[in-house]
Image 1 (cartoon, one colour):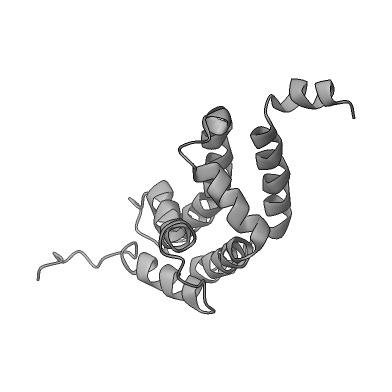
Image 2: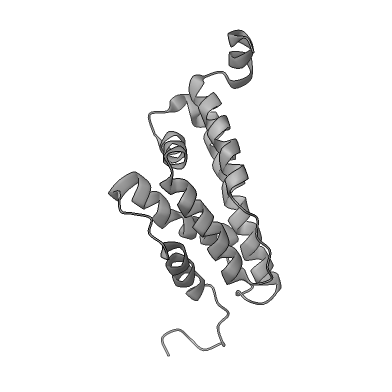
Length: 154
């Protein structure tokens, strides 16, 4: 492919990288539908964790989150929206099956699940250890479970 064709399609080197790394991420991340919201989210978030622990995944996250990457700004929101939708779809199915409260905010749950992984890669450098995805899912879902009607304070 000629260089002008590349720039016509992607405009910048960063957009080309974002597209290439994102395509690899799409292949690496499952779309589980086992009928159990917890298991589906653990499978998805374990795959996300494994991907972000890889050099490609970490590079993608840094590129897509960098405030200095003005050249990827137009691609950033659609890119992250598409990735968060996988988690949102799982949460919506959990709501439909009655596993989660009817008023559960699927986007907020997806962001809450991804946030600790992103923080470890981008901010703290803490390892994405085995079992982390399960712990994040359990902690997050505890707040989204249907309540029995009693006030949280008693």
